[in-house]
Amino acid sequence: MLGKTKTKYIQSLGQKKHRDDERLFIAEGPKIVAEMLETVPGSISQVYALSSWARENEGRYNASLVTEVSEDELSKISQLHTPNQVLAVIRQFPSSAPPPAKGNIILALDTIQDPGNLGTIIRIADWFGIAYIVCSHECADLYNPKVVQSTMGSIARVQLHYTSLPAWLATQKETRIYAAALEGQDITKMNTLIEGIIVIGNESKGISASVMEQVNVRITIPQKGKAESLNAAVAAGIIVSHLV
Image (cartoon, rainbow, N blue to C red; front, side):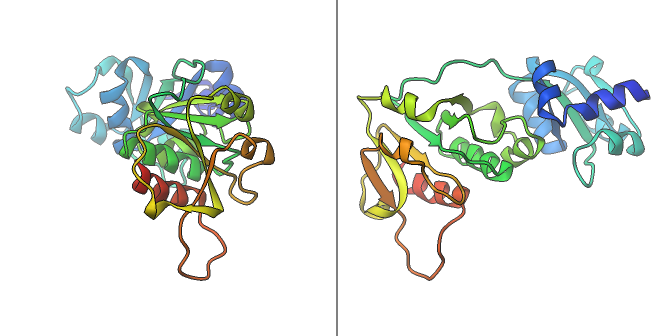
């Protein structure tokens, strides 16, 4: 049974300040929690689950990590509109400096502010085997519950680094930098990249001038209809599917 103090503590992890202070975050639902238990078991701080989930998954986890809760208790600590069987409190991953782009394909995100978009882009990167994403400081927080849910577990496999994006790009002299833009080279006519940085811009404003100054090649998705633009995550998926 969860007391009021523990309930409020878990609830507080929905806020960035408390997540950062405690170096913890929340993941919810059988799919994501199973991914976390399999991929980063050492990062799991505690699991709160309905008895049905605990029985079904017995033997797949360290039993001492699991606290059984009622549906009402799970509802109180959940960040979801409809709580889903299990919630895990997880230690935030170690932070490090962005990797050199030489020899890698890296996504660079310029002020991607929608948590769902950021989470989906992380999932796309995982699908196509992209191990690193470099984010501007203005991007959504990696540990925002909506970001975590949108990654569907890919948060454990793709490394995100937050930095001054123009400054970092300026140091990558040996690697070509590609920017998603409305006008540029047609990605369907380009060769697969062996290495490179692919920049995706803000949902409404696109890529900032300070970032665009560092770009070598503008690339575009050929338009056939009348839509003004594409969702940032959708655009990232199309571009990566052609170039990676």
